[in-house]
Length: 85
Image 1 (tube, rainbow, N blue to C red):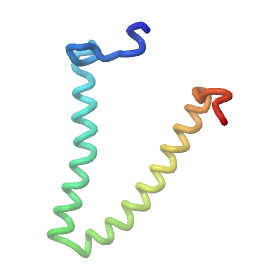
Image 2 (image 1 turned 30 degrees about the vertical axis):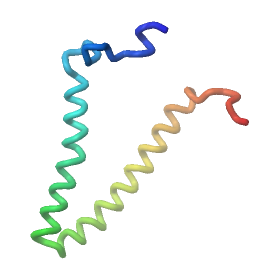
Image 3 (image 1 turned 90 degrees about the horizontal axis):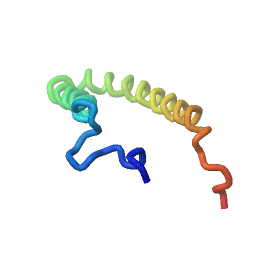
Image 4 (image 1 turned 45 degrees about the vertical axis):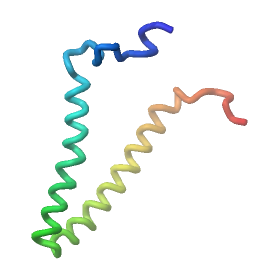
């Protein structure tokens, strides 16, 4: 096995100036900020939160379907052949 199999080094990181930290922080903010905004909206304006929830739920469902379809289409060439059964 070469370095390609395990890109993370013992010192942490991939040698690209902390890009993985930025990815982690971005991912956390992408989850925490909308949840916190929804909680605040639910606390202060529950009737508006119900309307926003219905719309955002539909948008999230469509985005999830698009994301799954994207990964299926782009990853189909990476599936192992002959692994069934």
